[in-house]
Image 1 (cartoon, rainbow, N blue to C red):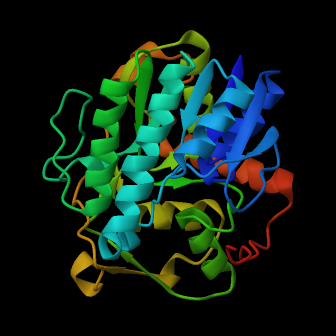
Image 2 (tube, rainbow, N blue to C red):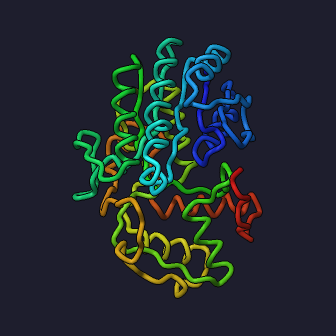
Length: 307
């Protein structure tokens, strides 16, 4: 398989590039600022239509994973023009170029396309985002469906992993870093998700690519949990002081963007279809511990500032 990954320096894209390379696939790793560690690096600004077409014409991939996006929920709310340009127009560029190349496109979407009023959303539930980030991702999904002949939309939730990627940390590493330094952490009790280990997501999506599975899949962790309980389970697993974690509510934060109360994803379809199953939180945290031990990063050093 000749695979082009956009956002290959990100938390998910970097792990997919690593996993696909280890499986002897030819990987072109698209990036904007931080050169990726795995695959053949290819400079790729998804908002530049000419650059997108040139990159895809050069790589000639038979498969494309579009993971690049503006994922900062509050930045999407305060800079809606940038969010639309990146997440909607950027996806349009990738989708149209993919179709020209007759490539299979897998688009990474989010649980934030739902309003969070009921949780445990299935693939057939109707999206209804309550913030601009969710809206841009939903519009991008719709573009993919109309612009590409062969596609898969993969929605995920609260991605975390063992290494900072693209100069940014993630919830798990942020929390562990604070607790290691005996610093307190205020975590909300009223936001429910299905946290997803990036390694698990990479394994599931690579299987979808290799089998050319089409349609929409919810590819997330198998455990529905609120942020506070997630934080406590992380602390307990790493034998850190859970007393440093204090409960609070969303109302305690003046975030520009609204957060869904319960955007957890139902992963039954993935459980029934894939050999690589969504992991329970217990097993995912065990895998995270193993990866951190392998990397010898017990100190949880803060990541470098993004360029």
